[in-house]
Length: 614
Image 1: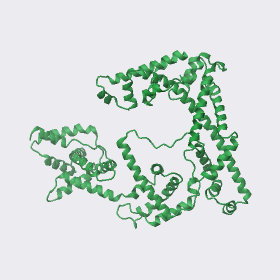
Image 2: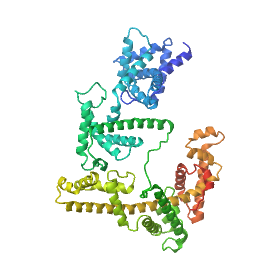
Image 3: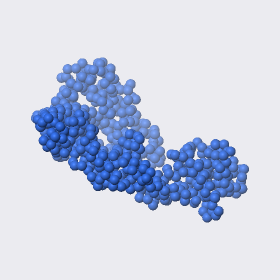
Image 4: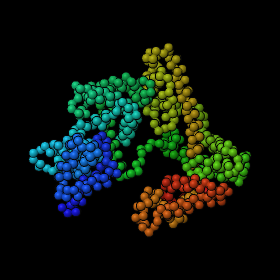
């Protein structure tokens, strides 16, 4: 045999393409690759006349000899896996194309067949069956492909739509909660909204153990290994559990509202859950294949969206934000009139340099040492000079826009929440969320009263009998007390939102001050193209080097960062008289954060924007 043929044989028995295994023989380690290659080179020198089948027989004999050391059997096993691995990879790629989700299916089949190949007993059994055949119509690789195909088909037959819905570990609360969260996200992506999501998930948590007990674990009902179709009795039992537990403590409000459910409703809900999970898998496959930077489904909204009309809400937010920004400018221009121990020449530096946002260059303690005061003086200066006036103005603006009487507004809000949204609270609304938490923290009797009165629309006379109250007057007083508590929660939430919003606007305002310095400097730099490719387009340095072969990319990026660092150092000292030479590392971290936040995504925007904060 020629040297080329010998090298081809060596490669066949020492190169592995799949390196992970979950259940069987431990996964292939890259450090074993040289060992396998050296062993094959030695065998080729010892037996230059051997062909491929001779090596297969040799390694097969080793794993069949119990007298061989374990290390020898392991290496022989890996040589056989390497011989079969390339054809296995090709077969799976081709076979996966016949299924609706080829990428996800391919990955699943890789995992499944890897567990077979890396399990020595499983692979030995397949080869033993091949050797036992009297006539070898197919070669070993083709035979193994057929065996793997049968294993895959058995797994497909074992799995079903109900496997997709009910294959949940009931012994682990964490895994069960993760599965429930996955179901919620799938329903959300499917376009299903509250109250249906809570009702579906509440039914699901009872259906899963009922189905598994009746169909999976009951020896009289099991049919092979398949996840069989549920029967009507499973849905009837789930409906009974749903109706029996819908008023227990900590049950979602959406579940306790409305009428009792039926077995047909449960069946329809579970079918909808299966459809959502199936489509959710398809979305995950697409995002993995086309976009490595997945965007999570986000329903967060501005906490001040408490006006029913979206247009009115946007106008309110814009009006409030612009008013607060104008107030910040006014305060900055009149700092010399403020009573404070901070020297006047340093007062304008407090907010741009050390107010806590992502681009702050100093912390309060560092700034205090630089200007010769203690940290408490800085904190009081920020609270009294900025936060307090802004909170006062924001409160005035909200009273003007919503209601001059906050008590009256909170009462109206609670009444509308209970009468209109009790069964379906706005999950993304801060005040509704807080009210839901408060209701769930009430004693069980109070929760039950609300669920029946507002969720079921039962009359007070009926509730006197159902809940064994003394009189309608007692129920009225309890409802008044509960509504009063909810109104107090609304007022407290409004105040917390005001504080949060003031901090949000202030952070954004002074963060923009620092950002504008960097953006202005970057727009004038010759190296901005490289920075844009690296940070805005997320290109690795080696790829940029291929596009710009005449540039030293790493050196250029470091030089650009040094220039941006120099800009901030000069700006701090030139505008405020504060030297940041001792904090160069902090400044470098700020620049790295700024670049990663894609502030340089579109430098041409700089020419069309004004920078009123500088």
